Image (cartoon, rainbow, N blue to C red):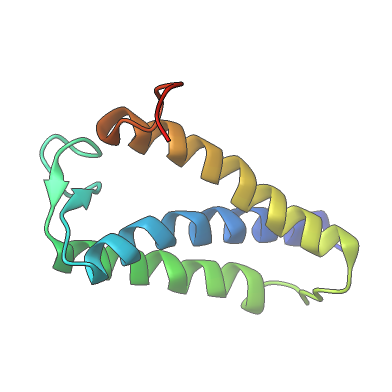
Length: 109
């Protein structure tokens, strides 16, 4: 196994973690933060922009996991790298988006 494949799977998980909130918010018709808003990452983008951005992240995730190397879900190293990328970036995104939606308060549900 090549170490670059592991890095690719890690970032594949990260891009998947980023795809989910944008796609879900867009499909629900809700505006959400995106890199295209003003200011970038803080302002709100339309639901259409978020679906497109979420889809782009999903495609990048797919390419990083399925077209780089030979990802095998039964291979622990592959799965751990993918899961770690998802978890690490998921936690970072939770903190980032929580600033705007009240998710960083200890008393929030």
